[in-house]
Length: 225
Image 1: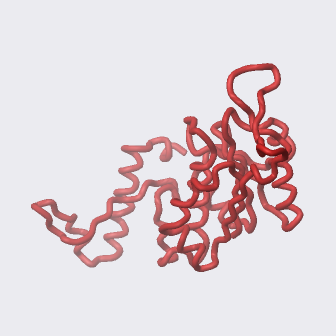
Image 2: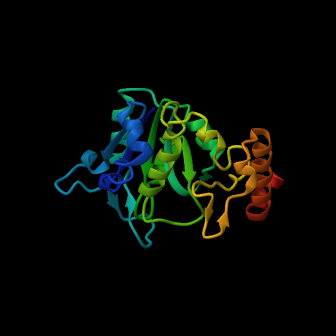
Image 3: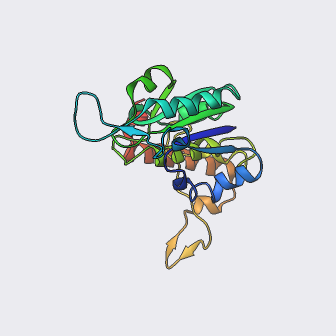
């Protein structure tokens, strides 16, 4: 999987992509992640990427030219499955969406900033808009890092246990059951006896019951769906 991220703050990705699962995927050659500074595609001495909005109003808007130049350069080199814009008013990211996108080969993630991007970019260049929640952040960099992590961990070979992702929350519209590890008794706080029984079928049944109950208690809307 190749992911190209367009941003005016490429340094924000150094931490998230230098550790854990994403780093492992990169080292294994299973994820190819490239950061592109939109300012490199701007003109003029100041490499300006924003301007005042037509019609007035507060804030600045990211200009169309540098973004289009960057996207066109990438498209001249390969075919992309999606050009994704991270925006609060996009389609809400969920596990089903992550599962689907993880099967794609080439993705572009566009990170907005300021008051957003020129609407014509959304009309003519973007193919999918994704939100990570009903709230506003300073830019699309953190949402792009979240989406990248959600996708990369699903690429075959990234996780040590190929079945691990299948038991994650939301994979079957249920939250994950409680998990425990050693010691079995810590200050009188004990692990449920069923998990120590060695009876695989009964353990699986217990975990499913716990998942259903936890989902009913915490996210009843998932049960309704």
